[in-house]
Image 1 (cartoon, rainbow, N blue to C red):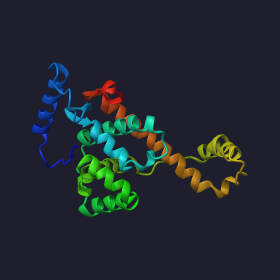
Image 2 (tube, one colour):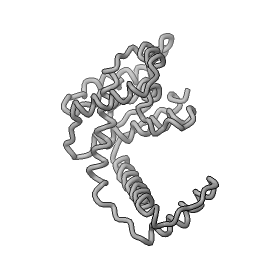
Image 3 (cartoon, one colour):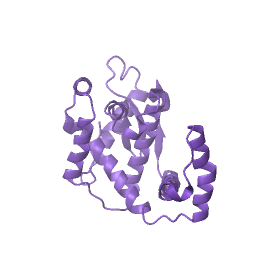
Length: 225
């Protein structure tokens, strides 16, 4: 597990994790037998483990990935975690997550998780509910940073909306055997969708630029093995 609290100096933890990682790689026999965890990525000396990814998947902390096939889900979670850590590390904003926000996010996870499955999952990882807070805090921090940087009046022109209506909305409705509504009736919906896509493109471009300046190691052979 990990904790991403900007006010706490986590450098000693990073050093310890890296030391264990190099022992595992270079010392014959180290880590064989009782394997507790695996390091699957390092983002500027901050470690992501297989357990981190598994906890997020098990408790559905990235709920927008719920429809993804299990084979793809862990890889998507891993890359989402890398992006989150990179943005939080390198973004200059001083943003805090209030305890009330954290409690609300945790309450939402608890309410939508089957109690029997939750009990076995908590036991599997040796957790209680509060142990999910570091994951939720990082997720909320990431969302706040992105919102502050990019959700400031993204402009969509009427020409863009018309093209989207003709090239995306109408074909999509027809594939669903639904009659497309007149553009004037879905104008707000189409504008919001285009704004969302523009923001996603801007965010991805920004993160790609951050990655060029970062030291990121991904151990997919360990992760997928």
